[in-house]
Image 1 (cartoon, rainbow, N blue to C red):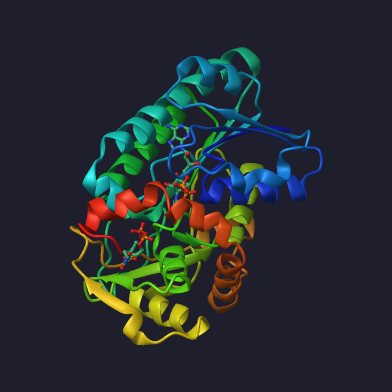
Image 2 (cartoon, helix red, strand yellow):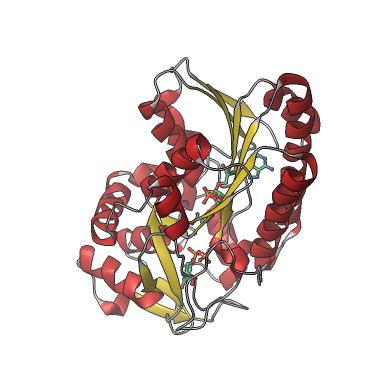
Amino acid sequence: MKLLITGGCGFIGSNFIHYILKKYSNYEIVNLDALTYAGNLENLKELENDSRYEFIKGDITDEKLVNKLVKKSDIIVHFAAESHVDRSILSSGDFIKTNINGTHILLEAVKSASRRNGNKRFHHISTDEVFGSLKPKSPAFNENTPYDPRSPYSASKAASDHLVRAYFHTYDLPITISNCSNNYGRYQFPEKLIPLFVTNLIEGKKIPVYGDGGNIRDWLHVEDHCRAIDEIIHNGKIGETYCVGGNSEKTNMEITRAILKIMGKKNREIEYIKDRPGHDRRYAIDFSKIKKELGWEPKISFEDGMRETVEWYKNNKKWWRSIKSGKYQEYYKEQYGSPE
Ligand code: NAD
Ligand code: TYD
């Protein structure tokens, strides 16, 4: 089986490549990644000499390259995206280009390759953020929840989901979509809540909580997410969407306290800062469809997953220090006006 992975040098994509090559000895993977600020070849260093793995530096908006790579693949798993809400608030051009135009170019390539070389399976990785913001007591998002994106990031992901579904209905492309909740685990770029807080604390810096810290996310360990994608690409029903969640709704303050406790730090490390504009209050996922149809449910408890994740960042300082001393620092300054 030949897989084309887009965005495989990012957080979830690199975890997925490790997961697949460990599980399926006869699978081959081509990883197409533009190596934006978020892409990191270090995530896949162990695979450099694995004959089943090939890295291609390139952009998903490069039609010619995408056409060539899609033709040679059986399954395309599309992770590549601009993925950070705060960045999309500062500047959204790249979000439109990669998340919408890039997905469109991939779909066109799948459409023309499927006509000539038999069907290509396309799986699109999306987010629960396309559904908007939940009230405290509202039922969790499911596959029938209407779309209501509220940030440039979530709007661009929503647009790409609509395109993927349109290509199923209009051209019969064999697609599936998964909308998952907030992931955490190894190789997550330290601009996102959990790795930012863990690495700041290791560096003796403050941890910036937005607003009152009462916003809720449903946390999913990246390994559980990889298992869900594996189930969907092999056993999912064509044309269907699957919501994937961690059964672990937590306020940002609960996450903050959990991290402080694991790391033996005190509340005084917290710095309450200006809230994110349009900050979605709550996300939660009802994953009963994928549980019923594919037998998937999250296995890693939040407590175990967090302990393991903190340990990983403690043991891999070289990985995140090189990131934090580079472009990330400039970004932080631009956002908050002063160094951390
Ligand atoms: P990430 O930002 O860590 O990685 C994105 C990767 O895509 C990087 O390697 C980057 O170099 C690559 N990329 C960006 N633009 C590209 C382009 N034009 N061409 C080729 N490669 C490009 O993202 P992530 O957190 O791993 O997220 C992966 C996917 O999962 C995204 O589609 C995101 O929307 C979705 N998602 C993420 C989360 C989460 O909690 N991280 C939750 C739900 C959904
Ligand atoms: P983030 O990891 O950026 O993911 P998303 O916005 O896609 O959910 O943020 C998770 C939550 O943590 C969100 O409510 C914003 C909040 N947050 C902070 O309070 N401080 C921070 O420095 C960051 C990055 C996020």
